[in-house]
Image (cartoon, rainbow, N blue to C red; front, side, top):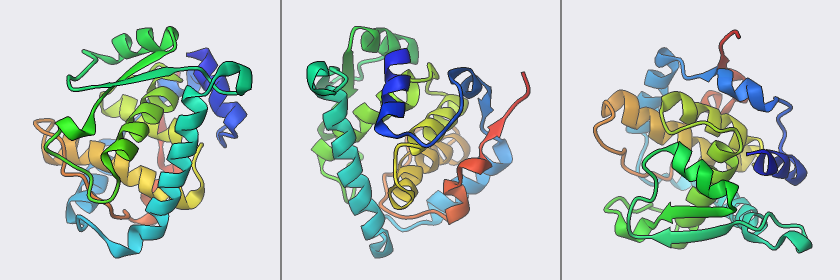
Length: 209
C-alpha cells in the first residue's frame, strides 16, 4: 500500500529497499529452524530483556499514534477496530481494508496465549502497526516468506534496542510456529531476546528476479 510504504519512510524507516524488492524476500529453512530452536529454548520471561521491551513498548505506542492520527495533523488516518473474531481470511482481505484506511485486529484478550510482559492493549497496538507497516506496506501475506519480509520492513522503524524485542515477537514466533510446531499452532508468547545475529537485517535472503 503506497501510503503506508511512504508513511514508514516519513517516520524514518532505515531501509532503502524498493517495494518490489520485498517481493523477493524468502525465509531460508535452515535459518528458520535455527531461529525456532533459539525461541523454544528461551525463557518465557527473561529479566535481561527488560530494556529492549521497554523501548519496544514506547516505540510501538508512538507508531500506533502515527498510524491512527488525523492526516491534517501529520498522521496516516487509519481507523483500527479491535474485535473478538479473527478478522481476515488472508492478507488480501486485510490489504483491501487498509486501502480504505481501515484495519481490523483480533483482540489479545480473546486469546488463550497472553503476552508475559505487554498489556493486552499494547499487544493489540503492536498487531495493528505490524500488519500495517510490515505486511500491508509491502503487500506480503502471512506465510513464512511474507512474515520474513514483514519483519524486515518493520524492523527498519525501530531502534536497534527495540528491534531485538521485535525480532522475538515476529521472526521468533513465526519460525517457532512454522519449524517447531509445523504450522499446527501458534508458539507460546515470550518476553526474551534471541541471539543478536537473528536481529541483523543482513541475514534476510533475497532471491534473484
